[in-house]
Amino acid sequence: MTLALTIEERAARARAELRIGAAAALTSGARAALIGAAEALAPERLEDMRRLGASLDLAITARRAETLKARAYDGDIARIILGPEDGAALIRSAADPASDLDAPLKGPFRTRREGPADLHRAAIRLTKQAHLLPAALVAELPGGAEQARALAAEHGLSVLDAAELAAAEAEALVVDPVARARVPLAASEAGRVHVFRPRDGSEEHYAVEIGDPPRDAPVLARLHSACFTGDVIGSLKCDCGPQLRAALARMAQEGAGVLLYLNQEGRGIGLANKMRAYSLQDQGFDTVEANHRIGFEDDERDFRIGATILRRLGFSAVRLLTNNPRKVGMMEQSGLTVAERVPLIVGENPLNAAYLRTKAAKSGHLM
Ligand SMILES: Nc1nc2c(ncn2[C@@H]2O[C@H](COP(=O)(O)OP(=O)(O)OP(=O)(O)O)[C@@H](O)[C@H]2O)c(=O)[nH]1
Ligand SMILES: [Zn+2]
Image (cartoon, rainbow, N blue to C red; front, side, top):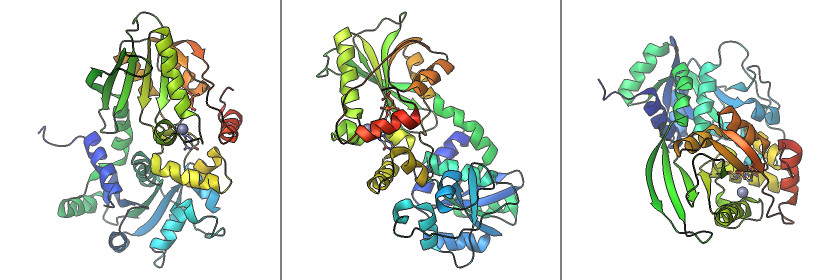
């Protein structure tokens, strides 16, 4: 029956469900759990999960666990054991770094050592993909997958298999061209915008083509990650706006180029989480420390999507405008030739100098 949803479609739906505070069910073989996003799940639903579950955990990343001084027995993640008294306030304080400074001695949190952590890991992945705080409530069901399917059928919940979910992530890298049109730009009247839609239902990405770059020669290219604050409202905290405009100006000057505008706001964590990171930066943490304290890696972007889009446009070799060696490495790993790295050093000001120094010192950016 082709009306049945694929795992990718069910994952897209589950991400939306987590964002609106609904629960979903995850299975792994005969085991299963109900999950919810720590920042969104309604308290009444939490009580249902507590009632139905043989256990109730808060799954967090090892990064967040480090800030909370909780032991991460599962490598990249940790499972905080919630007791009957642990309600919404405790969950929020464990998941959300906003109050860390007011309550520096959170916890102590007891973390789980025994048993598999695959359901917890899958739940955290979904919250990250939904651009929520990377923290999930996980109630293991005593009746396993059978109980999960019965509950899902009764209440209209999504049921996803953790292993299938991981395998389905490759679909995020498959994009289809949707529409394109001429858009005369201030930098160059020979502008054209192409919209690409990922098969996994995640956000669309755009390509801005300047002129008519030949497909058989390395194209002057930029992979620009969305920065609402820098690109749109002129934030002085980063260099994104000036980089965006300088890249287009350089392409206009050469008469040809392609700028990918990738919707990877905040290095892939979304604007809400980026503002959480900025709030931590106001408390004195640098850009990398701030990401870690929320529970993210320094950089959650997958640049392979950029290579895919370039190839869809017919390019196989680039002269890449970037100061980030990771972008060069990822393009090459994806089979694109980087004929040259073209530095893009613009837009330093007194308010972003420390940020740019941190990127150079900790993230390997070339200055
Ligand atoms: N999480 C987080 N993201 C930030 C911060 N400042 C800027 N960003 C995001 O960082 C990304 C900047 O991306 P780029 O300029 O494309 O990449 P880059 O790694 O700096 O590399 P190049 O500019 O190519 O040298 C954008 O998605 C911004 O939204 C910050 O303090 N925290
Ligand atoms: Zn920026």
